[in-house]
View 1 (cartoon, one colour):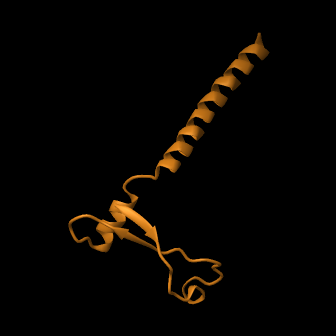
View 2: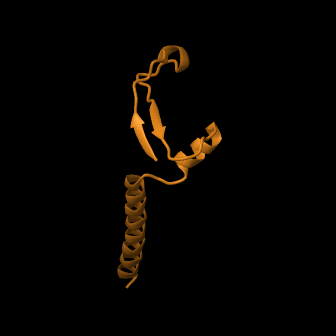
Length: 78
């Protein structure tokens, strides 16, 4: 499945009061026709790779910070 940004031809002020931009995307799929729910499930079923990397970094940072705090606590109490 490939996602492509397209020009949005909507009045954003009427739909989203105060919005400064509007995103619109088209998706080309192979094979079957999808209804709106199936298309949304397919689009959101997997996180983009860059989000997976950020989540992994966040988890690694949390683990390191927890370890560092336990070491600092052990040193302080010694």
